[in-house]
Image (cartoon, rainbow, N blue to C red; front, side, top):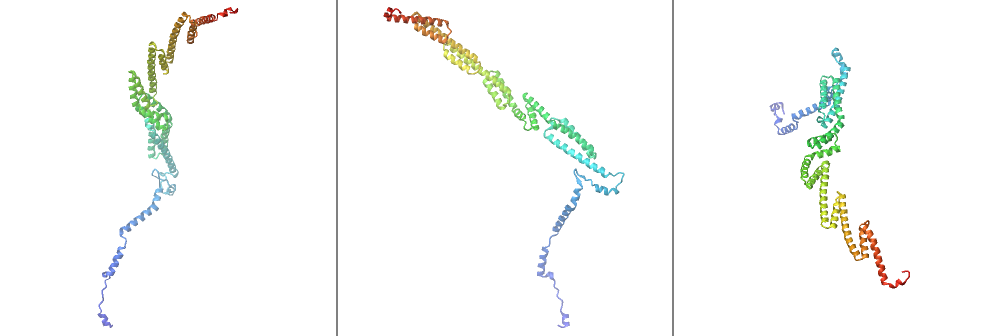
Length: 396
């Protein structure tokens, strides 16, 4: 091609952005780029991490509880040249202050621990004034602490702690007196005071058996009191069986109630005594009615009750004597009849029966001897009559 021809060629304008292929590729590239807020978030996280790693340890190391800046002796020494020597605190003095502050904090921690223990024991119920005085000493220590008079604060805290320690050491004595007061309230039927006192004693000593039993009794005290009042009224009216039943209900609620136990014994003795009198009266009625054998059986039943046995045994003896006397009189009548008919052997037998009842009866002793001799004489006479030939013998 000639230069003239080349001059005639017009330049072609290629706009790549208008090319479909190029536009698609561009869109794809732009869609893969991260958005601006993602970059900002990543930058913030990196910044926070740097602060945590490099800055935070330095800040924390400069402080200690209770949120007071630590004393850095090296820093003080390095800055001595910049501080007015007249008004500056020496490193030694500042170190002493730090030590006193630590001592005050330690004493305060012990005081607060003891306070917590006493609060658990409900100290304000049994030592309100002394407890308030000890806390007042602690409050004075707080004032000293705020003004950085740490030695005075430590001493005030120590006084408060000593007061609380003294209260804590008195728990055993308070427990003993509390149990005494609780028992007295129980005996006076003051349920509210008794419950409070026994509950307080259990705070002091959770496994105290006296307090456990006392609290249980105090909780049923009102109901027990109502039963006792009703039982006493029935007792006065002579309704002994019903009264005893109510006293037994009291023991079911309160097995340690000594009053109810004693009243049960008293009422039971009266009931048995009344039963004894009734049985004995029945026995005498039988005796007067001519039935001594049944009377003796009745008296024996009375003796089995276990009360007034001497009286029952005496009645039995008396009845047996009356029976014996009646029998002796009956036999004596038979003896008189036999002797009148000269039935001496029969009389001897009746005398033996009398002596079996009472061996000391003289009429029976003498009478038997005479009757026996007469009976033997009768026997000899009868034998002689039946054998008359014997009289021919010299010996006979």
